[in-house]
Amino acid sequence: MTTSTPGTRSPASRGNDLARQLTVTVCYVICIVGSVIGVGVFGGTPIAEAAGGALNADATYLAPASGAFSIWSVIYTGLGVYTIWQWLPSQRSSERQRSLGWLVAASLVLNAAWILTVQAGWVAVSVLVIVALLVVLAVCFARYSRTPAANWIEAVAVDGTLGLYLGWVAVATCANTAAALTDAGFDGFGLAPEVWSVGILAVVAAIGVALAAFGRGRLAPAAALSWGLSWIAVSRLNGELLSTGTAIAAIAAAVVVALAAIVYRVIGRNRIPGAAAASGAYR
Image 1: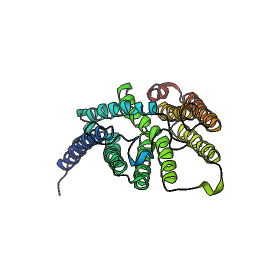
Image 2 (image 1 turned 180 degrees about the vertical axis):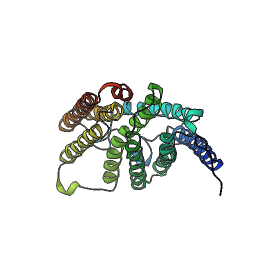
Image 3 (image 1 turned 120 degrees about the horizontal axis):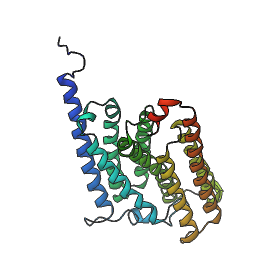
Image 4 (image 1 turned 45 degrees about the vertical axis):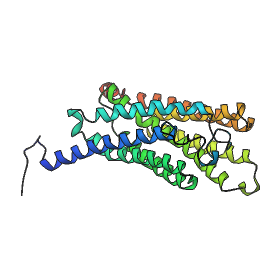
């Protein structure tokens, strides 16, 4: 039986850490290639036009305007920074990175898989993929919320990136599900589309409040949620599929999510005295 002295890592641990770092890097490359295909650079059909236009801005009441998708540039950049960050010597054996790395890698693969399923026209399957992605990101959120980031760089590269990722995917999951149901001919059990859209937006707002409560007011998920909700409002006020009721509900949901994050952040900081407050400032 082999033993290691305190403060040292076994060869097996070093090997596992290296495997995790390599896997995250390879998966990031796969994700970027998939995203490039998704916007049609390599001749593929842009997402908005794929699957018969099921996911375009005017396909359903919950579809955000095209400007909303610019957030992916920020998320992908952040994921690139995360990929570099996890290679730093200080992060190789970090328990925080060990708890997150494999999940982040899974999210990157699921991201690419979602693009491919939409490109193939499998809208129903894409819902299963994006729900799996949402679950993975929710688990990430639960894990990194347990401890504050060590400094502002980690707060941005890890907490900020994964928070934006989670918030946006939560909105995208609702839009994707609505698109799949519409594509399948779902009639809403006779209820008006606005009734469904307002109800779902209320659920999204509730999710945003729950994230704020659990994460003690983390700003990144709230920012991405509010961003996506605001662009749903824009689409319903200026697109071809107009719905003032849905737009008002989306704006209200965005405000509720933003306010919840601010309130819980203030409450969380007031509960952290002295030195603990300084360590929690990077959340």
